[in-house]
Length: 304
Length: 122
Image (tube, rainbow over the protein chains, first blue to last red):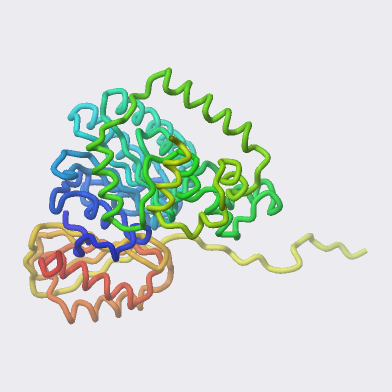
């Protein structure tokens, strides 16, 4: 299947604005992508059809295999422009199927190009089950010795169930534009009121869920600029370093206590600025305007 | 005493959220595929996806549309007729999922899809 991947990757392209198909063709070695369950073989969501809503032929996710710097990899790319990249039954089944195939075929890694608000609410329980199946499949794939690398830099970020899924991956590559959290800003505002969280304050949203904040909190392996070259280079480097921890019980417990200590330390704070100050950053107000290279240097100083 | 039946003080408009399925057949000279099926576009707000597949009928083309915007059959007919007059697309089946794209966007996407199908665009 040919897809609209005409333009070669360039620093001038925005990963944030690209489609799922453009992103994966930029990430992989040129011409190496082979799609599994292409739009002609896949089928649109029956749940959406029952609700009289037009579906997408690929149900909003592209899966397949290819090469990254000559290493064989599997790839999953979510389409944020189709219903917020939401995970429906078929969308989820494609992801789970690819992860199970990875356990059998043993590629060097699975690249997961996340761009999703989480469960597709139109599909209710089927969507929720899909998310939990993806979570299980990610852990099984990692246990089988195959790293799953999440790349977060799309317009929908990684929220809801997909926020959890992203955190279960071996490593996360994120851009400043990327966002990662559980409940989305509008959900929090709806449930707890605008006094709790003003979802229209875009700068606040990014200071709390954005890529720079996540990276400063040591949740992500790399912070990259918003272009396809940066994402590809970061993924290539992670695979070359191959320093992924298997998802053992000891590692999970260590992470759990790290998160509990963090919750205790920062629980009364309302803004990323306060958190960065508490982390020991001299000039927190300078963070939003800092470039990736400087911020990476600052983060390395904090955690060594 | 006057008895009145309870009713709302204003009429509640019937909210119709349902997609429309349209199908068109055109006679048109045949086109040679470069690699097989192609897809372009995304089912996003104001956008559409176009899937072009080879079909058995060499001198005609079937276009199947699922759209979230009801009641625009005449405009689809006009846009597609214009497209068919500009391009030879015989021997294809074109399927469209539309999320309220404007006629200009539809025209551009169709042109893009058919150029990909013929191998003019990579």
